[in-house]
Image (cartoon, rainbow, N blue to C red; front, side, top):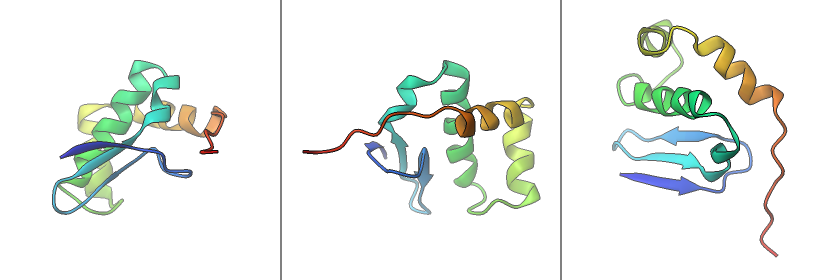
Length: 83
């Protein structure tokens, strides 16, 4: 299952049931950064942690993931508040 989220602090999440949620604010990022978040969450379907095996899976698909991950931390995206 795939769903969009409005999470304040997460770009994505994956559950052990196979559900993936992606923050709609990702549309403010480049397609490469979005791809990184998707690969990150799909890798959680194999390893539900941030172990070396998990990062090895991410790196096997996206060897340049550290630079893409850094971009997520550098860019300030305005919050959308329900009001």
